[in-house]
Image 1: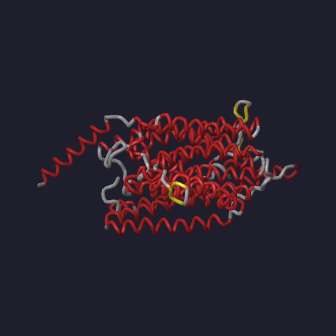
Image 2: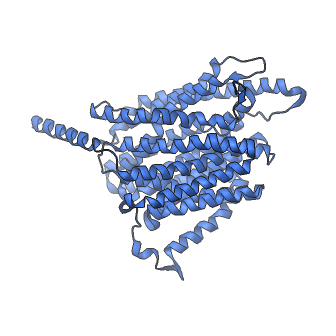
Length: 505
């Protein structure tokens, strides 16, 4: 009997190795390009948003951070509903196309140049992202069969596409926006989204069979009075935009909204798990636990667009051989390091899987959180000039450690969702995963307000620089120590969590 088990295990290993040698499905590279341009759109706008709120709309730091936090939280909460609508009505392909078109429209609305047009553009982008983000990731997961060892590698390659778009956004959009006007940067972001939709439509035949509506015959039949299901979704989506406008404007309610949605999602996941039996129940519990650790990571990581950008503007020497890098452009370090190291990590997971040494998912999450904390502690070792500026290498090291931690968590988390849940609720579960990003972005906005450096000119400028540096240093050191401790705790409990995943790695 033992010999039979050994033979069966060897057979599985040989089969996995044969699949891994086939290369990735063609559809992966179409989705890579579409997601790359969608991220160019999103990160182009995000890179400029805090500075636009402060410089053009004359918001204070704390007010800008809360608007930013509410907007990015709603961006990541929207896939909860967008994933469910794709699962039950639209299918992933139609949902992604609709989402891309709405995001492009939202970017062009911001060109109106007022707070009103910014908020309505944000609302439109949020709805569009809800349809696009979770569902394109779901299509990637459906390109691979259960147990396919290429899945983690495929998601890491997909993640490189995300970060090529982010790199272009934080260099091209950020520099154009700062030097030639914020409207030019936002317009570039909108054009990028149009390119993404074009790539997606042109290559849709490479994945279409995995992305069609669950009941295509019902999609264009009367559903609500004279309206078809498809038309009802369109009308409903447009009606949500003014509601999102109000949520961003009165951003205090966003936290309550997220809490209510989180309770509903957790209940839905647990109810499905209990219904299906002990294995799925345990997997759903682990999924929910890792969602909370995901919030910890991204609440600290997502300082990039808020406090870290203003830290770069006020307390980092950005002069490079006579050229001063824009504060928003410093956000490019993260996608740059993803691109440099992403392919290495992609090959690493495949190699470790072949030799049976691939760490389980909770261990990867723990390591990622520890690296995040070490990044913030890097601020403590930086030398300080007489002008209370730290050298640019401080941010370089911080973003390098953050990015390395991200590679242990983000692509692995996307892959994990498609492994742990039944295929018929992939979109819903992916939406739930992005809900954890929503919570983290809202918390990130609150954390950013702790830096409390509003910035004043004139005679108090040197004193303000000293005070702001001390505040940033204190907040980042606390964040670093707390997150390292949380990461160590997750490593200690990784064994029991891994057992509850019942073979999913």
